[in-house]
Image (cartoon, rainbow, N blue to C red; front, side, top):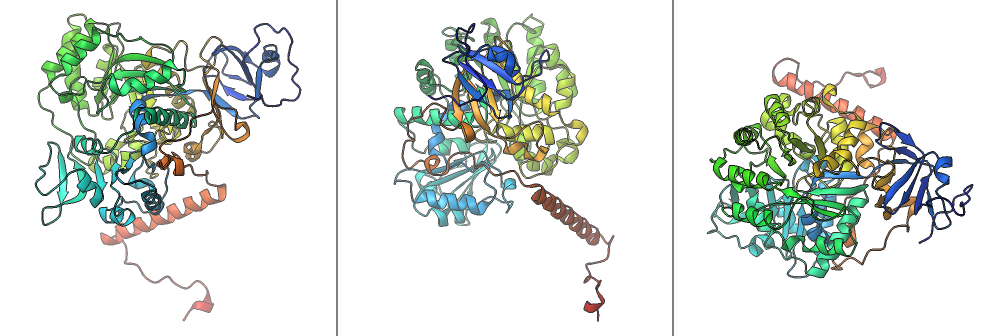
Length: 629
């Protein structure tokens, strides 16, 4: 493939250890305290061999070196999502209509209506996560009637967070729901007056009713699963993601659902490094599954592209709470006996694990089991373990996590569920959910991610926007300024933080000699754009292990070719993935702030008037005598 023409650079014949790639004319944030910035770097055999200024790195240019001019753009270490359901997301990507980034319900329904005309009989249209009603100008979800109007004959399944799903009549029939279908445990089928399902499914609070319904939809064959996964990984590369820690999840069985990434890794066709976890899928058989796994594979098995990282995010189904903030916190039945067996089994075989725990009440119960095992010498030990989510963890629990050698992986679920959390628990509770400042102050290893694709979007810049601004996708301010993290810290949580989870923080997360050549050239300078524009950032060039896996803008055409999308009617073929929007201009931003201030002022006036603290609205007095009486 051609290199970019670069003036003023003469290849050094016989240069010592000539590079495969040299990136120059860049503003590189290395993340390395010993050399925090540079303008050039060199790559050989997948690793960084030099970092410095253009003149220093020029010595590594040989006759076969590809020289890439960054044109003064910002460069950062490759992003690493510490909690992404990347394997499951890849298996389904080309089947899904993504509303990630769509700014109005009207546009979303128009996309659905158009896709209905392209979807063959027998297939479903599925919108599966990555959006929230708060991101729409209309500030609401679609109704079953709107789905029926947009797609009268094609089954439509729309998942809204872990809270609910909306189905049209065709999907209700395809899923087999009737008057006689009982509500599953923890779920509700909403019905009309005559008892017929009306198209709404509620997690009350368990999301299993949502997932089991989605599982009734058609799936891809083996060849298309491979194509789907490659295109999903390319979509992640679009945002500068070079690594992901797969958190497994429901309806992701080992080894069947892992076959695609294993095959891609064998053929050297992965473009994202994946560390994966194993999640027992059948309640009541968790110990049997874990026993079989610890006797056949070990954490660390694999290579730098695909490696086993441990168990979780569930070890036993009974120990998992549900993060539907529209419902009260679930009261879990006793689970400690089987949970203790699972943890003991893993620790005795040198396995690490991760645990889904939204609420401090669950975390306290888990820690009580760990305290018992600590008395036997199992904690702190050599196995890496962590809590995922931990939105309401308390300072006392954080102290215990630190003492037991644990870590935490946080996700930007509050970007999408912050309004629901605030409505239920109040703004004071939301202001410390999750308590990032306390986590950092306690010295607990901390990493950031998204929990995509069924709640948050996989776009990491939406998560970084949340970390830096404390605002939801609906622009609700959750946190006061003193509870926000800096841009530098947020980026570190999204680069080296993820590497800590997999024990690779000595080779991944910094741009440093000897470390993996994983980096992204950004469309906008993360450190300079207004905070509200962070979510609009993408990569224009993404490199993983010295391979150019994504290229756009000035670099378009330098990346590796992908097979055509299949099936041809895929929503991704028509609409792509994340629906990007341009950062607002300064004038538009100012107008938005003025309109927001006016709206807030009017809401305050109405609140005072309703309580007798202000006079009812009166016609405005004329300010110009020409308009007077």
